[in-house]
Length: 104
Image (cartoon, rainbow, N blue to C red; front, side):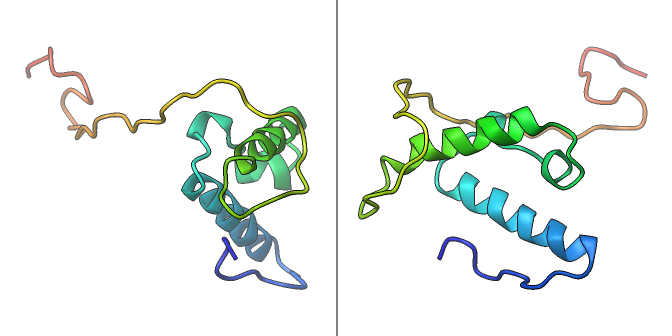
């Protein structure tokens, strides 16, 4: 499957977090954008259920484009095609942080 290892019968919170993190990583590998994913705290601590719900609906829309998967689906098919790109990596320093317009 998409998640290589699942901790079954979790008796500790960190094993549950590992499962949620593995799920989030798998959705990102499937092409889900970072802005559409929830965090482990959103789900495990109940921090933001709306974000979790929205993420699952986004995942449902995304699965319609996975070759060989014929359902079942949740939600409606997504209409927008947006490319997810990582921000450029920058190194922060102790003197000016990420700003390059400040010299010490």
